[in-house]
Length: 503
Image (cartoon, rainbow, N blue to C red; front, side):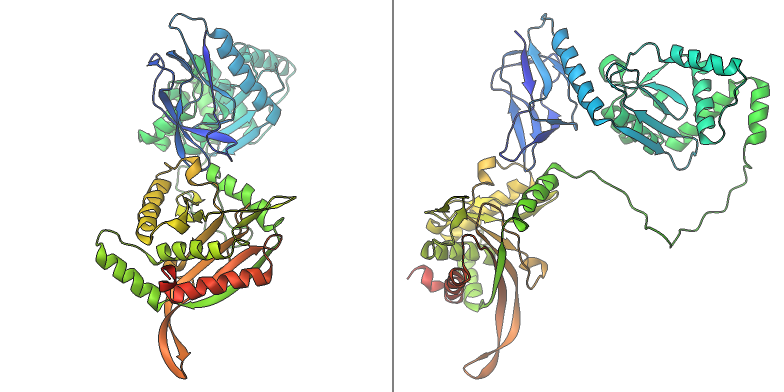
């Protein structure tokens, strides 16, 4: 019996996944538990394992495409097993989802004026059409695949008989080009809406492509392959228009040539400095969408208050130098010392090492410190478990290893979830002071600024010291002002004299 491969939930906050790449191709044998694909979740890239044994019969989601949790993305079965029912069911489910969204897209290609894309999703059971660069296309949603050209001819015939004139402007031009395209080839292209939009934006002649989707449909990966292959959109568009014109009757070419604008180069328009500025939109990554969802549940519902103190860091900096002299390969940072000091202070102030649980406050018995790491798509917080029990050298090695894997999106969910307290350090970027947003359900987060030399008064004299400003964001449902202040006092005392760590 065939095994349905669905988009799995690979992290606690995952709602959809992007298929990074298939590790197996159609026809390959797979065994239960064997990795068959890599999935980009909101935080990491993880392997998806097969839940059955057999042959990978059908891949329904291409690399780079996104699917919600539970959607069918592949089928594993016996080599001679009939899987047509599952394939049809997957196709109808996808079509129904797209029909529900009622997507209507219209994209105009800038240089070629006449190049237009119109993709509309019709109600279930209705025919769907698209027109791009004058080419009649068959939509991939909810339509019947075989009668589009016939219906167009039937619709055009009454209008011709009644002597109705075509509307003027771009609409007439697109309609005439569409008609010419049918007269030329009598062939209809099968193109998905996203592929159609990408082709119009890139200026790619769809008739030069061979579709790799079901039934020869041109899909997103075909357009990406064409772009990466270095096609010359402008040259192809010019060649296509020349071929089209050559195949038209002579009297039609004469009429059209008289209507064509002069071939003299038009003056380049000057960029406008009035009105709205130019812009472009890019889709948000899964990680950025997750950050947005989580922080909306923080800064609004969580009652923040902030406490700031300034700490003399000369002894901590000296301690770092001494540690690195003992082990040249360790390369401990000031942030590693801050993690250890934070964990030590949390054990002395358990009211801060806590989280709000609606009807209770949960107090944690160890310090699991989340360390914010900036990566390409956003921010992730690898967790140093039981930091209160680890030496600074061990923390340094673990932070470096987790940060490297975080940037490579190779962390497992248990390595970036479940912190009891977090630290965000922007000091290395020259930020003197900032406030950080609490990561629920944690009750607090430390924002670490830059360590810079400043003149300060010591024993009645002005001296230069390495000073660092730290701001603590507190959840007032768990931490009161005095509680947070006492924690910061302990934190400052230890950093200014790290010998307290061994006292």
